[in-house]
Length: 402
Image (cartoon, rainbow, N blue to C red; front, top):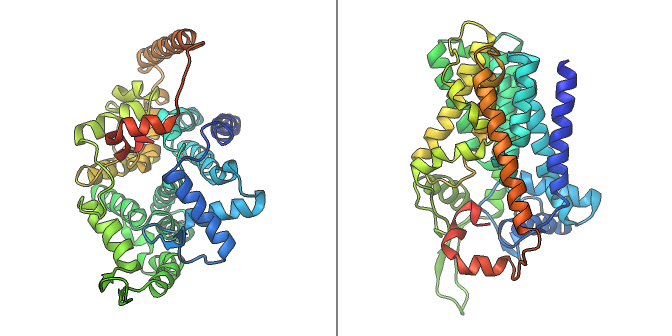
């Protein structure tokens, strides 16, 4: 039964995310084109250390997403859909991993719901329509939290080492937050449960993360040192190298809302929290049931629910004190999906009322979609997206401005 549910989750996720890589819009200016062109430049130049855009070093981001897109180009050719393929495959894998976590900790029924929450929620779909590595980061963090709990359950040292390996891979995807999120969420869980932290083998496991992540960071620092421009045509000035751009500007200063240039905006904190009702729609209708769940770590299900609470809670609180774009909280989605799945599937008798509410909400939404489709079926749509962006420049500083 569990295998059948996992297969259904995979098929639904594949239909959604593989379908979107061949659907409009094509790669757009800014994020889409930047990521794809950098990957193409890497493939053509053979320089896999320094990302470049139009010949200018692009030092702000980690390289793994560029490497994956470049690998897709090498296999399938330089196409829009080939650039989107690693993102789509990561989204499908994330849906399956979330389902597997549900099966391991709860039941096949909860696993089925958890996978479907990830495969069909609005937020994951919206924020995988642009070429950002956050769904890959979310996948790696989900794996890290799963093997973290398995290591504490005493399943073997290999799970502890897998935890540190996930952190190293995550740092190559998105920088230091890939280490901060699982380590800090895990520390909160350890403090609450008073679990034995030595089962994570930090002294022999942390070097694994360093071996994975450190070589590129060292190579990029050496290849892009700061320098002073003394050419006759320019005023002498200090040019910041990789260390400043990557560690200070993109990590410390971005967190403090001091990043230069300030070409972004921040979502108001209350709205940042409330928008999760939309990002997890339609499954957010089960949110009231989440508050009724037991988080006592007396069994595996209780420990997973508590870990999911620590995991999602830390991510949301972290960005409450930082700059916030709409998609920043994506690493919390699998944890929230597991809790919503428990609300939908753990207590069938108590969950009948929310299930009726969910069916009613789905029927209303379907009716609204059909009504809108009928009304706009023959509606002309002149102009293009550039007109919309130039008409609303203030919206472009937020993620949904794309």
